[in-house]
Amino acid sequence: MKGAVIYGARDVRFEERDTPRVIEPTDAVIRTAATCICGSDLWSYRGINKITAPTPFGHEYCGIVEEVGRAVSTVTPGQFVIGSFFASDNSCPHCAAGYQSACQHRELVGGAQAPLLRVPLADGTLVATPEVPPPELIPSLLALSDVMGTGWFAADAANVKPGRTALVVGDGAVGLLAVLSAKQMGAERVIAMSGHPSRQKLARDFGATDIVAERGDEGVARIKEMTNGVGADSVLECVGTADSMKQAIQAARPGGYVGYVGVPHGVTLKADELFYTHVRLHGGPAPVRRYLPMLIELVWNRKIDPGRVFDLTLPLEQVAEGYRAMDERRAIKTLLRI
Ligand SMILES: [Zn+2]
Image (tube, rainbow, N blue to C red; front, side, top):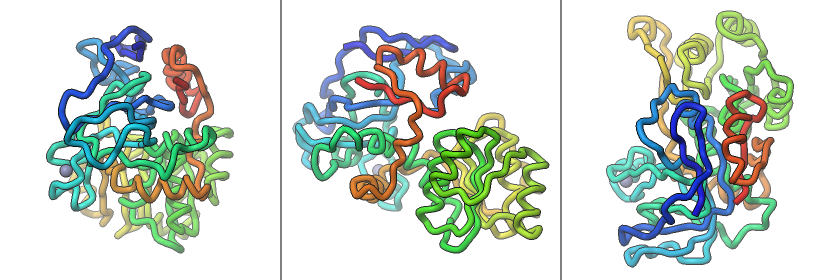
């Protein structure tokens, strides 16, 4: 089997790898229908997260169950399934509370940019679709594995409610799907911060009512102006840099919420400054598993089409070009055909 392996900064290769197989009785092996490249992979691709040894790459997947271990009872070979980047038992106290990405037995699912993938804790991790989907639904179902669930968590953590104002910081794939999520949750006003025309257009298609192209202090001033000096009720932070986090907190109203899902890099918060903002912060790796059944239903019934964030499709063997395109911001998100 050939799949993607990262060797170091800007060095992703498509090469021979061990064929995944069932190791633990709770494992499943799936034949991936499609996979993709995550914005968070770029932290490694750009050398910000150090790579110490060649590592199979990718963590977003969906596909047909090929084989299951003897302890697996809820999924069977032939079913089409989707799972999160964190495998979870879906039964421990943290899972029961809806935080499957903090499961006491969680395991990262890695190496998904390949035709076959081993998924641990299959019963708790994988959710089957009603039947094998038609090909046109696959991009949207694949998006549920991470990017859509993460956008949804940003909106949920930011307490988006009908009639309120939601502000989305970040115009990457997660930010764009955070716009879609805020719209689905009934926000009256959804403000997307983006300076890129093609991303602004997609944000509008997903439900943004306003676009703010300014950033930093100027961006914050613009949000204050648009909200009569008050600030946004809910801010969805989808980047993870010091600037974006600062912007998110400053643009929220006193008593407002910041849901942050961009993996923080170089962000430090001063407790005394935070104290006087009265802002509530909630974030972390999204508990995608919690949302999967509901999001599958929305996609299945054609209520949402998160697959539209894929603006580049390449065969898996061109995975290196997929990374280059996203690194250079030529593509929002790359789908890899198997
Ligand atoms: Zn658990």
